Length: 121
Image (cartoon, rainbow, N blue to C red; front, side, top):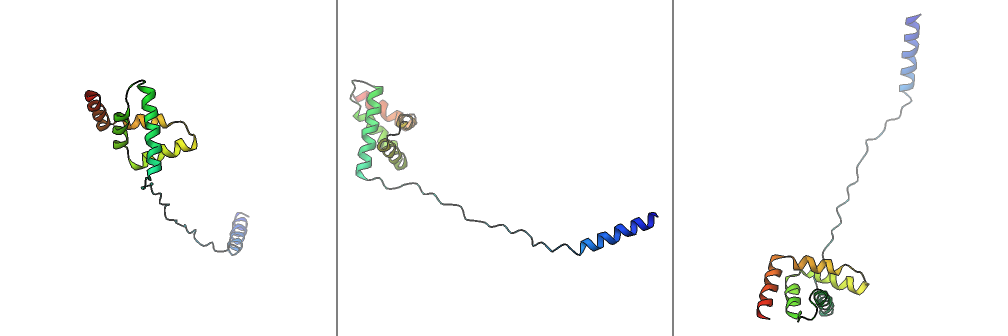
C-alpha cells in the first residue's frame, strides 16, 4: 500500500512537471541617472533682484545702518546658484530667503568681510 501511494505521487509529480513552461530569467532594465545641472548663468536682472533681497534682509537685521558694504560681502561670497535661487524665490513670492542669506553670512569668509566693512564704517 505504501509503495502504491509513493508510486502514485511520483507519477503525479512527473506528469505535472511536464506542464510547467520554462520561465525566462528576469531582465533588469537600467536607465542612466538623470543629470541635473545647476544653473550657471546669472543675468544682470537676477543679480539685481538677489542684491535687493539680500539688502532688505540685512536692513531687517541692522536697521538704520548703511548695509550696502555688508550686502556686497554677501553677494561676493555667494555662489551663482545661491544668487539665482534667492532671485527666483523672491520673484515667486517664496519666503525663506532669510535662511539662504543667513547661510551665506555664516561662512567664515563672509563674516571676515563684514567685520572688515564694519571697522571701516
